[in-house]
Length: 373
Image (cartoon, rainbow, N blue to C red; front, top):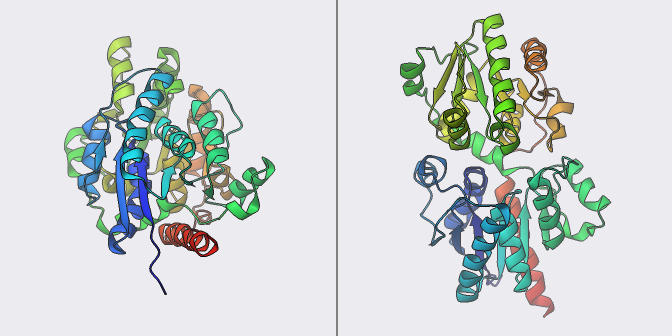
């Protein structure tokens, strides 16, 4: 069979995108496909972005946009201008974006206006809360995309309900499973955390927490409530709380003068392999991250979500997650519930072969287009 001609552009810019796009980049490299990567620099802190290319064994992106903080409009516009220049220069046949970030939106809008087909990985997720900028991004990208790859049948149902043709929707599972299975094999005990926290990083011997969303950590009151909740949890269960600190949260802690309660150990952001080890061995995880909700569900670690909603309802229905919000006593009550939860739920996100399905679908669709033209 004649080899398909297809130049692929992968656009990413945040830590979660790097992690979830890594299996696609690996697939392209292994199959010797024609591809290149644009890094928008949305996460411009080295510990949140740059280090991940090295740790995941990925080649450096061909193009890097200088990251700067700004409003959503400023960030998205700056990325679109940069991406447009690259796409006009390199003329890819398809652009792949992932998730719900400003990088995702910038890539999808720019490509679609240049009439380059867009593939959206992790399509169809909905929190049904349009106050979240991520929700706006998800909806816009899904309706701009030509190939939509929802991770579950539920997310595919969301797309069909919005009038997106079924012929453009391909349920493939979630590439986070690909990465979790890979990193489970190489993950080692992160001894630096034991050294910093004086806590045993052993199974069920600690609680893990992450909080980074603007609605949680840009507010002194909300972040203060989360810390109060952690204080109650530590006092009740006497398990050390390990909190790898996002730069956004670190900034608020410093500027607002918030006191970190006893029993809570702050650390630098950790690698994905270290994160998998910590999730796998934690007694319970408290998080506002969608990706970590998924990872907890895959690894069968009880999860408490520090939000009022989730675009991953599959995790709640499976039994691996509970929605707590940010009220301190509600956080504590939800931790109590999840500590008693039997870890018998099924993983709803696939078998760890999503990247191959995505790339095969894109290449087959491209082949069909060439044959019909």
